[in-house]
Image 1 (cartoon, helix red, strand yellow):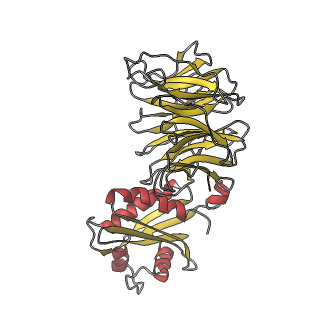
Image 2 (image 1 turned 45 degrees about the vertical axis):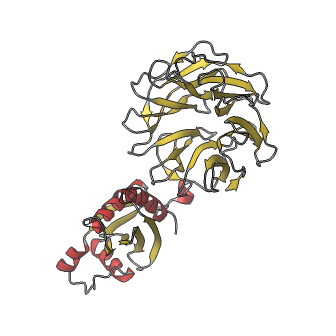
Image 3 (image 1 turned 180 degrees about the vertical axis):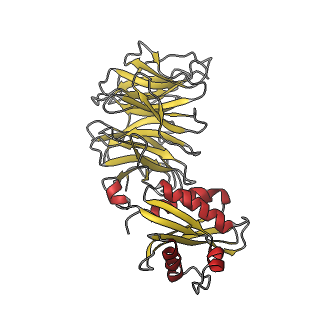
Length: 412
C-alpha cells in the first residue's frame, strides 16, 4: 500500500483518470470541500474548484476521454450535477433544482463508456432513484422506480450494466441492472451495509466498501456476486474504492494515518487461485472452550456456530459437523483429557472422518473478549492455519468470525 496524501485534512473520493496518470479527489485542505487533482504518485496537487463561500463539491468522476470531470456541487444553492474541464475551467451546471427545495438533490454522477450519457442518483420525485441523462443535461430518463433508496450508480466498462446501491432488500446492498434499467439482480446478500461499487476495467469484478467485519474495509467480488474477498483488514475506515485503468491497483480513502487520506494498493496478488485454498477441505468444528468470565450463555457453542457459517461462506470448506466435546468424551473411549491440543483435536477429526478440524477458545478478561482459532490437519495433527481477534463488544463477534474464516481459508 502507498499513502498519496499526508496533510492534516480530509481527503476522500479518489477517481482515477482514464490514462492512469492522475487521481481526482475531494479535500477540505483549503477550508472548503473542493475538487483537487494530483499525479498517480501523489505529486503535483492542484485545486480545481475555488468557491468564494461555502459551496461543497463532491464525487468527482472523469469522462472516458479524460477531458472533463463531472461532480456534485452546492454552488447553485442546491446539490446538482456539474461538469468542468479537466483543468478546472468552463464549469457548467447539468441539473437544476430550486434552492428552496433542498430535499431535491442529484448526486453520484457516472459517465457511460461511450461518453454520451451520465447516470446519477436523484431524490427529485421524493425518494432516491437512478436516472440517466445526456452529457449536456438534456433528455433525462428514470431507470429505477423503487419506493425506497437506489443510489450510487456506476456504469460497467463495457457499457452493458450499471451497478448501484439499494435498500430494496432491507439492507444497503450492491445490485446490478442492464443499462436500460432492466434485469435487476442483487449481488451482496447479508445484513451489513455495502456501498461505493467500482468496476474493474475488464468488467469482470466489482470492488466495494463493506462494514460486514465490524469495521469498514474494501472488498472485491466477481461481477455476478461470486468469489467475495476482503482486500483490506484495518480496524478503522477504508472507503470509496476506485480501480486503476490497468486493473493493477485500487485507490481508496482510509483513516489509518489518523485522518482520511488517499491510499493506493496493488491487487495483482488477489485471485481465487492465489488467495484461497485450491482444494475444498471437509471440516468439522469442535465446540470452542471457554475461559474467564463470559457474559454469553454457552459462549463456546455459540461462537462455534458462528464460525460454522463463516467457514462455508469462504468457499474453501465444506462443513461435516459441529461437534460438542463433552459428547465425545461421554460416548467414546479415546483417552482424552478434555484439553483441545493438536493431538486430541486430530483424534476427534479421525473419528469423524474429516480432512481438518477447527478448534479454539473464547475468553473474557476484564472488558476484552478474545477468540482464538486453529485449523488442524487430521492426519498430521499439525496446525495448518491460525488466527485470533479481540473485541469489547459481543455484537462484533459474528463479523469477526467472517474475518477469521477468511484468514483460515488462505493457503498455508
